[in-house]
Length: 232
Ligand code: SF4
Image (cartoon, rainbow, N blue to C red; front, side, top):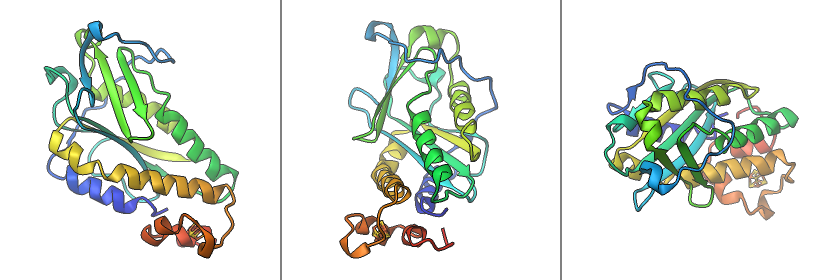
Protein backbone atom coordinates (compact mmCIF):
# COMPACT_ATOMS: atom_id res chain seq x y z
CA UNK A 1 0.00 0.00 0.00
CA UNK A 2 1.79 3.09 -1.30
CA UNK A 3 -1.22 5.24 -2.02
CA UNK A 4 -0.63 7.73 0.79
CA UNK A 5 3.18 7.58 0.79
CA UNK A 6 3.72 10.92 -0.97
CA UNK A 7 1.56 12.63 1.68
CA UNK A 8 3.42 10.83 4.47
CA UNK A 9 6.68 12.04 2.92
CA UNK A 10 5.40 15.64 2.80
CA UNK A 11 4.28 15.33 6.43
CA UNK A 12 7.70 13.96 7.42
CA UNK A 13 9.45 16.86 5.69
CA UNK A 14 7.30 19.39 7.54
CA UNK A 15 7.97 17.61 10.85
CA UNK A 16 11.70 17.16 10.39
CA UNK A 17 13.69 18.96 13.06
CA UNK A 18 10.49 20.34 14.62
CA UNK A 19 8.59 17.34 15.99
CA UNK A 20 9.32 16.18 19.47
CA UNK A 21 8.43 12.74 20.76
CA UNK A 22 6.13 12.81 23.75
CA UNK A 23 6.70 10.27 26.52
CA UNK A 24 4.36 7.29 26.76
CA UNK A 25 1.46 8.20 29.04
CA UNK A 26 -1.71 6.68 30.42
CA UNK A 27 -4.67 7.36 28.13
CA UNK A 28 -6.77 10.36 29.15
CA UNK A 29 -10.16 9.11 30.41
CA UNK A 30 -12.75 8.58 27.67
CA UNK A 31 -16.38 8.49 28.89
CA UNK A 32 -17.40 6.80 25.61
CA UNK A 33 -19.55 9.60 24.27
CA UNK A 34 -19.20 13.22 23.35
CA UNK A 35 -19.38 15.56 26.28
CA UNK A 36 -20.53 19.14 25.88
CA UNK A 37 -17.99 21.75 26.95
CA UNK A 38 -19.80 25.09 27.17
CA UNK A 39 -17.91 28.17 26.05
CA UNK A 40 -18.06 29.60 29.56
CA UNK A 41 -16.26 26.47 30.87
CA UNK A 42 -13.59 26.45 28.15
CA UNK A 43 -9.92 27.24 28.76
CA UNK A 44 -9.27 27.62 25.02
CA UNK A 45 -10.12 26.26 21.58
CA UNK A 46 -7.85 24.48 19.14
CA UNK A 47 -8.39 25.20 15.46
CA UNK A 48 -11.37 27.47 16.14
CA UNK A 49 -12.08 31.21 16.19
CA UNK A 50 -10.34 31.93 12.91
CA UNK A 51 -7.25 29.81 13.56
CA UNK A 52 -6.22 27.34 10.85
CA UNK A 53 -6.97 23.68 11.37
CA UNK A 54 -6.41 20.43 9.51
CA UNK A 55 -7.03 16.76 10.09
CA UNK A 56 -6.14 13.72 8.00
CA UNK A 57 -5.30 10.04 8.28
CA UNK A 58 -2.82 8.16 6.08
CA UNK A 59 -2.32 4.42 5.79
CA UNK A 60 0.86 2.64 4.74
CA UNK A 61 2.51 -0.75 4.78
CA UNK A 62 5.84 1.12 4.96
CA UNK A 63 7.43 3.03 7.79
CA UNK A 64 5.92 5.71 10.00
CA UNK A 65 7.83 8.88 10.96
CA UNK A 66 10.95 8.54 13.11
CA UNK A 67 10.31 9.06 16.82
CA UNK A 68 7.65 7.85 19.18
CA UNK A 69 3.98 7.08 18.87
CA UNK A 70 2.83 10.59 19.81
CA UNK A 71 4.61 13.57 18.27
CA UNK A 72 4.10 17.27 18.91
CA UNK A 73 5.04 20.32 16.85
CA UNK A 74 4.40 23.51 18.79
CA UNK A 75 3.09 24.04 22.29
CA UNK A 76 1.51 21.39 24.46
CA UNK A 77 -1.91 21.92 26.08
CA UNK A 78 -0.58 23.08 29.49
CA UNK A 79 1.54 25.72 27.72
CA UNK A 80 -1.30 27.29 25.73
CA UNK A 81 -2.61 30.57 27.04
CA UNK A 82 -5.39 31.03 24.51
CA UNK A 83 -6.94 29.75 21.27
CA UNK A 84 -4.48 28.13 18.90
CA UNK A 85 -4.01 26.74 15.38
CA UNK A 86 -4.40 22.96 15.37
CA UNK A 87 -3.71 19.83 13.36
CA UNK A 88 -4.13 16.19 14.28
CA UNK A 89 -2.58 13.84 11.79
CA UNK A 90 -2.81 10.08 12.11
CA UNK A 91 -0.42 7.69 10.38
CA UNK A 92 -1.27 3.99 10.42
CA UNK A 93 0.93 1.05 9.51
CA UNK A 94 -1.37 -1.73 8.43
CA UNK A 95 -1.57 -5.10 6.77
CA UNK A 96 -2.01 -4.86 3.00
CA UNK A 97 -5.48 -3.51 2.20
CA UNK A 98 -7.09 -6.14 0.03
CA UNK A 99 -10.03 -5.96 -2.36
CA UNK A 100 -12.26 -8.03 -0.13
CA UNK A 101 -14.38 -7.68 2.99
CA UNK A 102 -11.30 -7.42 5.23
CA UNK A 103 -9.95 -4.38 3.33
CA UNK A 104 -13.37 -2.78 3.36
CA UNK A 105 -13.80 -3.36 7.05
CA UNK A 106 -10.42 -1.87 7.90
CA UNK A 107 -11.20 1.38 6.05
CA UNK A 108 -14.64 1.58 7.66
CA UNK A 109 -13.30 1.03 11.16
CA UNK A 110 -10.49 3.56 10.71
CA UNK A 111 -13.09 6.16 9.67
CA UNK A 112 -15.21 5.17 12.68
CA UNK A 113 -12.35 5.77 15.13
CA UNK A 114 -11.78 9.22 13.66
CA UNK A 115 -15.16 10.31 15.04
CA UNK A 116 -15.33 8.13 18.16
CA UNK A 117 -12.61 9.15 20.59
CA UNK A 118 -14.01 11.32 23.39
CA UNK A 119 -11.31 12.48 25.83
CA UNK A 120 -12.95 13.93 28.94
CA UNK A 121 -13.11 17.73 28.86
CA UNK A 122 -11.82 17.74 25.26
CA UNK A 123 -14.81 18.29 22.97
CA UNK A 124 -13.97 17.45 19.36
CA UNK A 125 -15.84 18.73 16.32
CA UNK A 126 -14.68 17.20 13.05
CA UNK A 127 -15.71 18.70 9.75
CA UNK A 128 -15.43 16.13 6.97
CA UNK A 129 -16.22 18.75 4.33
CA UNK A 130 -13.54 21.28 5.31
CA UNK A 131 -11.06 18.65 6.59
CA UNK A 132 -10.79 20.55 9.85
CA UNK A 133 -11.01 19.58 13.49
CA UNK A 134 -11.89 21.95 16.29
CA UNK A 135 -11.44 21.12 19.95
CA UNK A 136 -12.78 22.96 22.98
CA UNK A 137 -10.73 22.15 26.07
CA UNK A 138 -12.36 22.67 29.45
CA UNK A 139 -10.73 24.58 32.30
CA UNK A 140 -11.36 21.56 34.49
CA UNK A 141 -9.37 19.28 32.13
CA UNK A 142 -6.49 21.78 32.10
CA UNK A 143 -6.58 21.88 35.91
CA UNK A 144 -6.41 18.07 35.96
CA UNK A 145 -3.30 18.14 33.78
CA UNK A 146 -4.56 17.20 30.31
CA UNK A 147 -1.77 17.07 27.72
CA UNK A 148 -1.24 15.72 24.21
CA UNK A 149 0.65 12.65 25.46
CA UNK A 150 -2.46 11.48 27.33
CA UNK A 151 -4.93 12.49 24.59
CA UNK A 152 -2.69 10.81 22.01
CA UNK A 153 -2.64 7.63 24.09
CA UNK A 154 -6.48 7.59 24.02
CA UNK A 155 -6.41 7.79 20.20
CA UNK A 156 -3.64 5.19 19.92
CA UNK A 157 -5.59 2.66 21.98
CA UNK A 158 -8.63 2.95 19.67
CA UNK A 159 -6.62 2.79 16.43
CA UNK A 160 -4.53 -0.15 17.58
CA UNK A 161 -7.74 -2.08 18.34
CA UNK A 162 -8.68 -2.01 14.63
CA UNK A 163 -8.01 -5.38 13.03
CA UNK A 164 -5.13 -5.10 10.56
CA UNK A 165 -3.54 -2.03 12.19
CA UNK A 166 0.00 -2.94 13.24
CA UNK A 167 1.17 0.43 14.51
CA UNK A 168 -0.12 3.98 14.84
CA UNK A 169 1.34 7.44 15.20
CA UNK A 170 -0.54 10.58 16.23
CA UNK A 171 0.96 13.97 15.38
CA UNK A 172 -0.43 17.04 17.14
CA UNK A 173 0.50 20.45 15.78
CA UNK A 174 -0.16 23.87 17.29
CA UNK A 175 2.51 25.71 15.26
CA UNK A 176 0.65 27.97 12.85
CA UNK A 177 3.15 27.82 9.96
CA UNK A 178 3.22 24.01 9.98
CA UNK A 179 -0.59 23.71 10.21
CA UNK A 180 -0.91 26.02 7.20
CA UNK A 181 1.79 24.14 5.25
CA UNK A 182 0.05 20.80 5.76
CA UNK A 183 -3.50 22.01 5.08
CA UNK A 184 -3.52 21.24 1.32
CA UNK A 185 -2.71 17.57 2.05
CA UNK A 186 -6.12 16.93 3.59
CA UNK A 187 -8.11 17.17 0.35
CA UNK A 188 -5.62 14.89 -1.41
CA UNK A 189 -5.96 12.34 1.39
CA UNK A 190 -9.74 12.54 1.19
CA UNK A 191 -9.64 12.02 -2.60
CA UNK A 192 -7.43 8.95 -2.16
CA UNK A 193 -9.63 7.46 0.58
CA UNK A 194 -12.84 8.03 -1.39
CA UNK A 195 -11.34 6.50 -4.54
CA UNK A 196 -10.07 3.54 -2.54
CA UNK A 197 -13.52 3.04 -1.00
CA UNK A 198 -15.15 3.09 -4.46
CA UNK A 199 -12.64 0.54 -5.70
CA UNK A 200 -13.31 -1.69 -2.70
CA UNK A 201 -17.04 -1.25 -3.39
CA UNK A 202 -16.52 -2.99 -6.73
CA UNK A 203 -16.35 -0.03 -9.14
CA UNK A 204 -16.08 -1.30 -12.75
CA UNK A 205 -12.53 -1.15 -14.17
CA UNK A 206 -13.29 1.25 -17.00
CA UNK A 207 -10.85 4.18 -16.80
CA UNK A 208 -12.24 5.76 -20.00
CA UNK A 209 -15.60 6.41 -18.33
CA UNK A 210 -14.47 6.90 -14.73
CA UNK A 211 -14.87 10.21 -12.89
CA UNK A 212 -12.03 9.21 -10.54
CA UNK A 213 -9.41 9.19 -13.29
CA UNK A 214 -7.77 12.51 -12.22
CA UNK A 215 -7.04 10.97 -8.80
CA UNK A 216 -5.74 7.71 -10.27
CA UNK A 217 -3.53 9.61 -12.73
CA UNK A 218 -1.82 11.34 -9.80
CA UNK A 219 -1.65 8.69 -7.12
CA UNK A 220 1.00 6.05 -7.55
CA UNK A 221 -0.38 2.54 -7.16
CA UNK A 222 -4.11 3.32 -7.44
CA UNK A 223 -4.65 2.01 -10.97
CA UNK A 224 -2.55 -1.06 -10.26
CA UNK A 225 -4.63 -1.73 -7.19
CA UNK A 226 -7.88 -1.50 -9.13
CA UNK A 227 -6.63 -3.59 -11.99
CA UNK A 228 -5.71 -6.25 -9.48
CA UNK A 229 -1.98 -6.21 -9.91
CA UNK A 230 0.26 -6.78 -6.92
CA UNK A 231 2.15 -3.47 -7.03
CA UNK A 232 0.00 -1.76 -4.35
S1 SF4 B 1 -8.22 2.66 -12.09
FE1 SF4 B 1 -9.50 3.51 -13.72
S2 SF4 B 1 -11.51 2.65 -13.33
FE2 SF4 B 1 -10.31 2.34 -11.47
S3 SF4 B 1 -10.84 4.08 -10.20
FE3 SF4 B 1 -8.99 4.62 -11.34
S4 SF4 B 1 -9.71 5.66 -13.20
FE4 SF4 B 1 -11.46 4.62 -12.28
